[in-house]
Length: 360
Image (cartoon, rainbow, N blue to C red; front, side):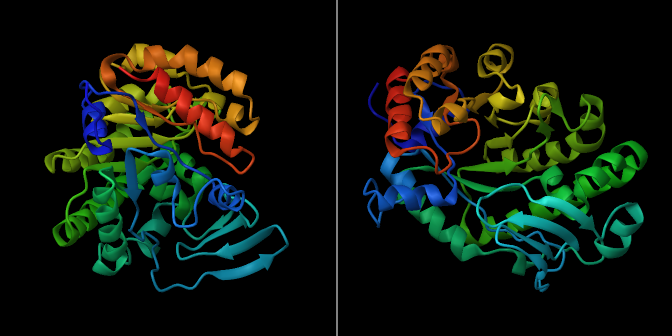
């Protein structure tokens, strides 16, 4: 088969149609590019996507914080962390030296009453929540590179926990389930309304990328039945809207979410990313069980890349690529993201070996 563009390749992979090779995409820590540039591996005017030839590009341009005009307040600061109250009324401790999940300290919204009083009257799908220029520029750049371009943003679960915290949200699933179901649908309705505004003004993307971390190590955050009762209806509505626009949906979730996959597939996802090995996810098992229904992206253990262990990387690629590429529905990606500990030559090896094995 003749070499395809990234756009053509991803278009086919997400539909599980024949392609020339597996897809390629990746996420990186912010300082990784800085390090590799300082070492002379990547030119100053070159980004990682162009350098490695990624098939996919994404752009997030929505601001979903409750109080748009709120200036975050620093409550405490050390050399390593900063404690701040944000526009959701959440007090979070963030690391300054590396990008990590912030520590949940306190939340203004803890229950249904707090939601009704503090959020519902304020959170509206207004035009000032969108940055169309950022989106327009990213869309044009992807078109120039012939990449498949996705609007990206959080779906309902990933929008709820910054507001009230995981603990309050999960307790709400058990004690006030109608509150969680209402919030999930509320956030999806706003997201769809903003997508309609953006796409009408700046053009549709090629696909939708939703971030939706629903698991931790060896367990999802909720039971499959809770997912179906409280979250799946909102997911299905957001995906139905995307499909009505002709846009496939890639859903990212860190953690062990395999028990939720049947429900996610019922909701309509076209591709699952990131298939986190250290959380208990297994690319080959998921491929065998679900690969005839969805495409897959990820599932390659980032710990091997962090350790710069090329033998382990080669062994994993040889073990997994052959089955993963069957049926044309696979995109090469680590199972998380690439930190500064990973050397350039290690990641270059990962890409070159993976794509060589992934040729059809």
